[in-house]
Image 1 (cartoon, helix red, strand yellow):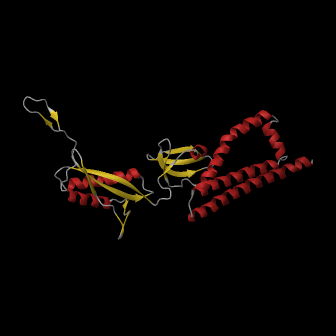
Image 2 (image 1 turned 60 degrees about the vertical axis):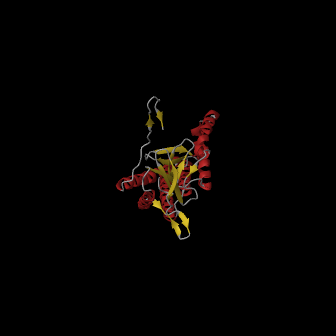
Image 3 (image 1 turned 90 degrees about the vertical axis):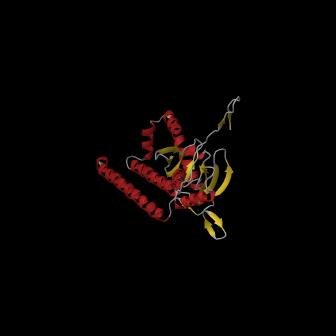
Amino acid sequence: MSGKHDIPVHVALFAGVIVLVWILMRANRMVFREIRKRREGLDLRFFERVSAAAILIGGTILAFSVFGGIGSVWKTLLGGTAIFSAVLAFAAQDVIKDILAGLMISLYKPFEVGNRVELESGTTGIVRDITMRHVVIQTIDTQRVIIPNSKLNAMSIRNFSYHAENRSALFQFHIAYGSDVERAMRVIRQAVMESEYSIPGKETDHGMDYAPIYFMAYEDSSLRLSTTVYYESTSPSEIVISDVNLRVNRALQENGIEIPYPYLNIVQRPGEEATVK
């Protein structure tokens, strides 16, 4: 009779454990949400997932212990066979490696959320999230690449935002022979300054300024001008490069400055074969 009377008690205890787990999960989300309002970071996202997993695992063990104790549950799950235990341990190896690698990434921070990185495979993108097993990277075409923590932790990663406030890119522009070079330099500089992505990044005696435009070389078919454009580390480089090139191209056309095509002069004199100059 006592066994029958214990069933409602067990059910009530089991329901209480479920409610407790739900409350702890909500509290966990609220605590980390408040922390992220003051500071965002890869480590916070990882430890939020770890704490949530710990609550779920602890709640599961506590819930099972209500019915006959956790020892009997393990006997039921494992069926008393060493083979099943070995298979389970083998399957958990990758999970454990990913969790430990995620911990190492969170502690040593080779990159942060929002950093722009390039992987050994050539994949370039922005770090968006980390879970207990994966890092999520958003590529240029807005796709998400999901990479196991253990694999990413073993890679050499090029981080364009690592301990750097700003980035820079070298631009080279070609104008035709006979163009007003000084005017072209002013036009290019103005176009660069009007870009919403460019910022003053060159240190001068009067503070930070935009980089000068330099007349670098006489090419075969053109005059080569060059400059460095500075921009914030959070700005995608392909967007910055495209915006600056479009602005300079339009500005040169509007000011009547020719952007030349490569060409060859073919000279043929009477009685001689044609030569290329």
